[in-house]
Length: 358
Image (cartoon, rainbow, N blue to C red):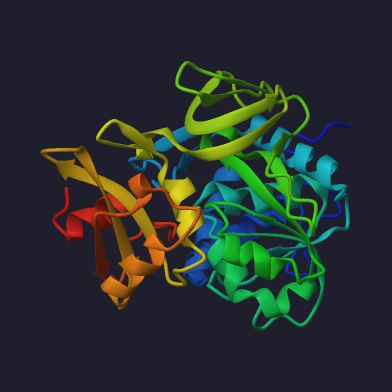
C-alpha cells in the first residue's frame, strides 16, 4: 500500500514510543500545552498534519526574499518523504534525529518522513551544537551548516547527514573531509518541499554538481536561472533565482543568486563566488554586496561580523591570486552581530540597513 498523509506507519516511533493516530493527537496536545518552545512547534505541526484538511500552510524562511506563507499539499509532502527514503535507502526502523525547528519546512519534513516511512525519531532542542548531549548513534539526520560546524567532533554519531539551508564554506568542506559520516549537501526550498537535488560531499571526488532526485527535470530560463519541473511535489513549474551551469536535465552546478548579482561599472559580480574565494582568509561570518554609487552604479563592499583589522584584511584580499582587480571590495565594514532571519540565516538587506548602506 502506498502511504498517504492519513496513514501513520506502524513502525513509527517518537522518542522511543509507538504512537497510532489517536495517541499522536494526544501527544500533540500535550506538547503544545506543556512542552518547551521547540516541542510546541512539533505539537502544532502534528495537530495540523492530523486534521481533516488536505493542505498545510508553511512559512518560508525569508533567506532569499520576504518571508511568506505558502500552501503545500500533504500528499506531495509524503511523496517528498518517500523520495528521500528511497534515495538514501532509509526504510522502516531507521533511527533518525530531529534537531531542526518544526516551524520551518526542513524540520516539518523530518517528522513527515518518520510518520510515512516508519522511522524511529528522537528529538533534541535545535541549537548550534545539537549533538553535544547525544549518547546513541543514528542512521539519519538533517542540519544547517552552522549546526554542522558546531558538531564536527560528534558527527560520528550520525551515519548519513544531509546539510541544507545555506551554502557550505570551503573551510567547512575541508573540515568535513576528516569525518566518517556520509555527507550530502542539498538543494531545495519550501516550494519544492525541501530538497529536489543532492550533492555528495565525498573525499577527493567532489565534482561540484547537484544531481536531481527521481522524477525531477531541470532547465534554465533566459537569465540562466534554474527551472524545476517536479510533478510529484508541485503542480506548477518553479522558476528560481538561482544562477546555474546546467550539465544535463538532471544535473547542475550552483553559481549564486540572480538577485544578489552586483553590476559595478558594467562588470557583473556574483557574491557567492567572491565569498568562496575570500573564505580562505575570513573565519567569521561575512558577505559581499553592492551598494548605490554615483559613478559605478553599484559599489562592491565587504561586511564582516565581529572585530577585525580592515587595512590588513584589505591587503590580504588584494594579495589573493584568485581575485581580480574588479573583485576587490571598495570598502570594508564590520558589525558586532549580523541581523538574521527567523531560521537563523544571515539577513543581508537588514544588516546593510543597520549600517545605513541602502
